[in-house]
View 1 (cartoon, helix red, strand yellow):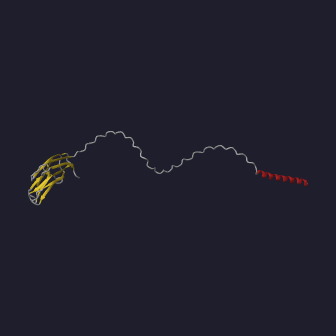
View 2 (spheres, rainbow, N blue to C red):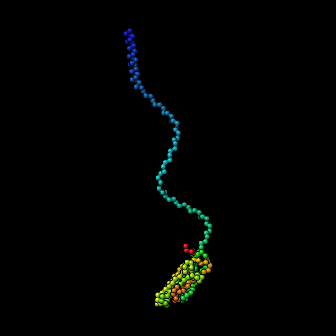
View 3 (spheres, rainbow, N blue to C red):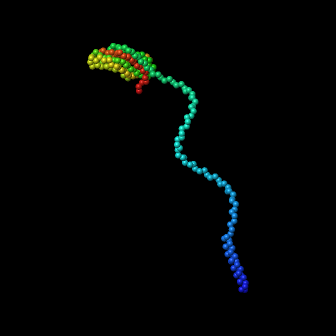
Length: 220
């Protein structure tokens, strides 16, 4: 009996020793050689489009380009309408007139329209002398009548004493409305001032006198 137990204990001891030796040897196993590289995987799907980026800063002005070639000549345009020419006239003379009352000189003018005015200018020397406190009047007439649209065109000369004996440059200008179209006789006249008697007047002396007549639009 004792021999049988001894045999069993011997088997158990050998088994324990073998297990311990196996455990130690398992930690010192040799590493195998690396395996072959694997194949590439399948390509993935395209991603979603990204959002638009923000506008960049404004760039600097570029260099001016070379001028282009000259274009072809254009077609001739339609004919325009003629504009109205100015209707005016000048009558000039170089002679004096000693008349104290009446027409000195007139000038015929062809007025084109009814709804226009006449501008009249007289230039020439004027004289009044040989009297004291006297007055003389020069005025424009149209076919013998003074302007009434709106007022007469005139000028007066007054002297204090009879010792004055001077010729003076005269200038009379004005506009007259309400004159019909057609031939108009425009004249420069001399007469007495209202409230004064007759006196010694003279028109023109040693120089050119003139009447200038022009048809113009009516003033508004």
